Image (tube, rainbow, N blue to C red; front, side, top):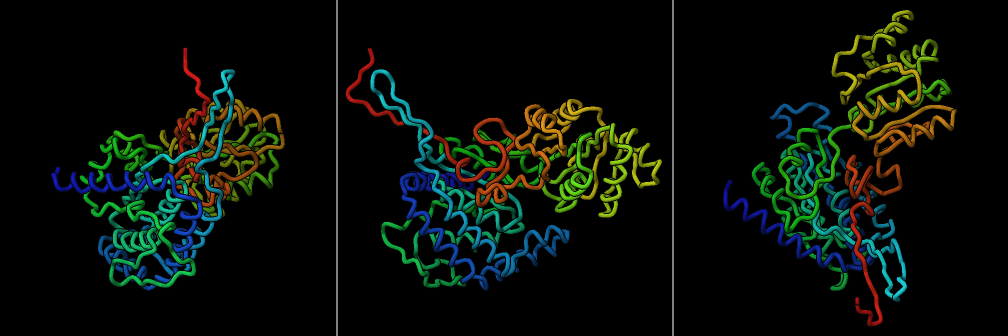
Length: 444
């Protein structure tokens, strides 16, 4: 690995660490002022952002990216306006830094407070969506963390243009890169409002060796959050000496119980599978209680088939669909643990809520799993028994999302057990520390 490349990312991390110490003591007003400036800069810079994005789109077409991949890369005025609105929503959220989690007084008079504090420096490794650049930058800023962003090569020029605006918003200074405007913001910056530009940085190369070097800087970077496909996340997890918060994939289940309302079950199953099938909280697996499968499974199958969903069935469910002349195919060995990310769904019958729980705990990715039932006791058993980050009763798995949970946005979804689990918003980007106040106590 190039010594120069190692030095580049090490210097970047040193600057981020220095900026994180400033951010940790920044006021809510300072942070919100920077966010307000960014929300104005984004739409004001639409022309320059679209020009940068056009360079990435031209390269994408030359490299034969799919239509779906190109759509994820694409910026337009509406998407830029949506990014700006997302920034405003984060600015409006309560500042988590300094929140008191616990307060106790010991018999000797020591006052012990547990306060929420920033993690420090967070590295975010992600792929092709430009909105992720803004989401990650503003969530880290509001929670008092410095951010090191490493986006995919497919969106490199767009990310550089976005970073220029973020750094301008932090400092209130004119944009340093030609071609980007310096509009007059309605919120005027002052010396006390300015924050270090190094609070948000972009790794200035797409060389994979730079990422490998970054993942070894555990004395400067405190947390890594990878977002993207399973191969990217596994590479980060396997090569990092820094703690990684992650989920590898989303193998999500919907269990339709024997006491399910048929119309509700149809609505939830179709939405969970079809509304956006290529995302991590889309349902990939359907379990149906055997006691109602004879009548309910054909109804669910017809609704799914109407949306061109391919059903991959176990023998019991296949037999029922065969009787009704409904299209299906026999499931292969790996289909019941697969993340299809498309219009395919595994289908099985189970004899009880307990069997559904056991099946989900064995075959799911512990991401998002749902039960549809009118039986509150069965739902509570499902809640207690399913070992997943997010569990739903009579609602679609598609709601496992930071915005839908009222977090403003999310920096990722975690299926880990330590520190953060589920959608990660501002509070999940914080740690805590103990603050002890005494009156001269000494230990004997």
